[in-house]
Amino acid sequence: MSDLKKEIQETGFTGEIDDTQATREFYSHDASMFEIIPKVVVMPKTAKDVQTLVQYVTKHKAKQPSLSLTARSAGTDMSGAAINDSIIVDFNKHLTAAIKIDSKRAIVQPGMFFRDFDKETAKHGALLPSYPASRDLASVGGMVNNNSGGEKSLEYGKTEKYVKELKFVFADGIERVVKPLNRKQLILKMAQKDFEGKVYRELFELIEANYDEIKAARPNVSKNSTGYNLWNVWDRRTGIFDLTQVIVGAQGTLGFVTEAEFELVDRPEHSGLLVLFLRDVGDLGELIPAVLKHKPASFEGFDDATLIMIMKFMFSFLKMLGLKRFLHLIIGLIPDGLQLLKGIPKMVLMIEFNGHSEDEVRKKVHDLHKTLGKYRARYEINGFEETPNEYKSEKFWIMRRYSFQLLRSKVKDKHTAPFIDDLVVNPEYLAEFLPKIRKIVKKYNLLATVQGHMGDGNFHIIPLMKLEDKRDRKKILPAMREVNELVLKYGGSLSGEHNDGLVRGPWLEQMYGKEIVKLFRETKDIFDPEHIFNPHKKADATWSYSFSHIRDKF
Ligand SMILES: Cc1cc2nc3c(=O)[nH]c(=O)nc-3n(C[C@H](O)[C@H](O)[C@H](O)COP(=O)(O)OP(=O)(O)OC[C@H]3O[C@@H](n4cnc5c(N)ncnc54)[C@H](O)[C@@H]3O)c2cc1C
Image 1 (spheres, rainbow, N blue to C red):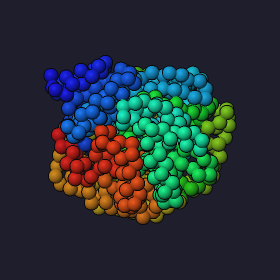
Image 2: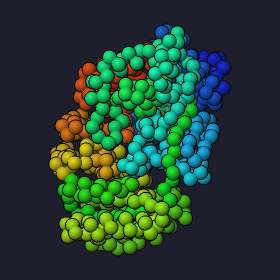
Image 3: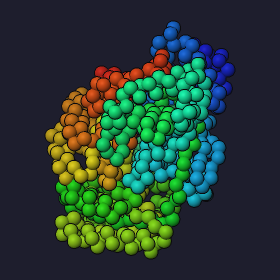
């Protein structure tokens, strides 16, 4: 038994502590292109266990500087933020309970899978609408800490909008409730002599002293998961100081979430899709604003490379979906398969509408079809398809949601390399921007699939590479630099939802400038003075560290 395992056992920690080779290897990966082997993996049973761990590390950090704690819920992070080299704290084993759910609010532990949470909220006709495409794999804790968004963010926004209260273990090892405070409550909080009082005081002073710069630093896009959300914390006009907002999206670099209270929305009663098979991606720039005028609930898409890969590995869906849903998928796709004989569209676009009845949805879908029909000769390759209810739409949603998972598990000679996987630019620039991105992808000869949230201008470009091959690895830095420069030239964000982690943390200065990144670092120091939480991520990331941990064994 390692000393570390023994020492953690002696603290009274009641969960599992596992330092076997197999477990450490399993936890050395998330869904990113990185690999870091931890010393030990622990699975807390209670919030008290989480506090015990934080107190243990705080106590020993001075003598053992390499000690740290990295939270992990379902481990589907694409930025490399759920892996590290010291202690991994797995919330997905025991801290998985729904504590209270009604039609308006839900209180839940972070390790609960979204898919289980969703079944519970559905019983109340309610929905947490900021779920990611990884909805069947991810947990609510990961959603909070990445500030996730997804197919419904166009209409409903991201997770930051739905977090109302958190239970949070601070760096002094004490769990406290974090929620929005009015001026009077804030003054009382800042007067406290303990660590919590110090955090409120110092963060308030930091934001107040740099108020205009911080507000101006907010990226001008509909969704952003980079940096710390300082612009959402303090509002002089309303007098509300909301600490939850800097924790949301912080990737566990400021402390640990042990419970989250969400506001829920009414689950849409009916929804349906207009599906458009696009002949020329160059038309997207003009098409996106035309579609957005109709105010769809979602506007998603995937490219021909994704479609071909889905067709090739169609039988893998059997394992992922089970027989009944698989048969539904296959039967539903027969007409589309026949249409594909005429040619493969460059992009499949899915435009979703909600309504109180199927007829209302059918009308919205049909109206858009009629409007876009004007452009038929240019956009259409195999026609439009109207799927005015959830049952008929499901085949497209399955393809959209599962495609990245399929890429990861099925393409054996190459590996997914998410490093330009989440860029966002304002849709008004897409006509100019997209051809330029395509040029860069071509210049570096990147074999990439493209999926995305078209309505938000948020694109997931996932190259497939031989990461173990030096020639392929050498492309990453220059390709990333060019893509990032282009995104920033158009006033975009490097990440709409997947967050910074190892992959984008080193680029924060390029995106925000030195002064704002200095404020991010000061924020980290206020919450985590000894840097015990998730080192090498976000504002603490450096490209040399990240690059040296790109995975080279498969
Ligand atoms: C196929 C696929 C599709 C995806 N699509 C999307 C998408 O559409 N939108 C999107 O936003 N993301 C997407 N992602 C990325 C990822 O799935 C989401 O961000 C998801 O919300 C992460 O949840 P998780 O439970 O796996 O988190 P993890 O990977 O376990 O953790 C994510 C981050 O949160 C921190 N964290 C976890 N639990 C806690 C806690 N209790 N306290 C403090 N910090 C904590 C971790 O340290 C890490 O930094 C996708 C990933 C995959 C594999």
